[in-house]
Length: 386
Image (tube, rainbow, N blue to C red; front, side, top):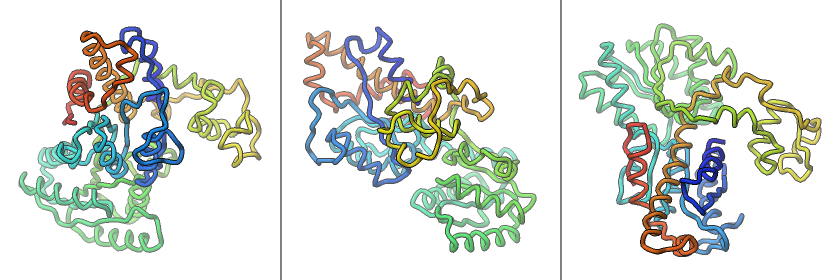
């Protein structure tokens, strides 16, 4: 919703991109690398079924990509987008690999390089004199890399790592046995501080829940890549996380976004499945229209009322207005808009008309403007490169 809010706000601003209107297409990667790649290719082709190296786009001009959230899904996007030199701004990919400008010449992000987070964890350990620690990480490329980086930084600061274990992201029976084995090992370890690095909140919650019942008097430190927003909706999960120290990206303010959230409804955004999913969850009702994609799965629910509104709920109670990654999305949209604006103004001064700007749009030209805008307009101290 932050993307929609930012686009609508920009289009209402006569000082930003005058005579031009921003549009958007939203694809949900669902945390899948394949879906992220399919969405990227569909955006290029402007068709549901992607046609490589061919665009059916006749009226609108593709100017860039916002996303994705995880490093795993961002990687295939960046590899493809970089071929055509379209700017891509991620709002959650922390992997240091994206700082390699030879491999990712058109990549930006509005979150820190993960190495700065590891440096923060190392400083925290040093501050409290925690020199003997353990590391748990997800069993994927990011987890293996994180273990190596953390070991090196902790060693350089005078600390030692007693153990490092990896966990599968799948909650299978075999993984449950693996969890039991690791919990037993942690029970017998002497390290009192354990660093947890995971790309799956569900896996982390499951592990901490098992540990909570058997392992006592341990200090858990979570990396910024762990998002507990959806995993802490019940009291049991909150109890499990009690006492956990978690790093997070800087929070930002989005003026007007709170009212925007309270005022959204399926009537205002009838084609947005995300809004319908929210309404199903909050009001236990289904679509006004049988044409809605979700309707076929929820025909047993009563129809939603036109009077349903989120103002019936105190969204602040569920931390809905703690804008962290949401703010990163907002910042990413504005960074791209400012870059396009600066490019538009520059070409207008050289005599190009609005129609000519759209017709002769070259995505690779946006690169330098994006770099300048991210450094000027983003309040977060991060490694912005593209």
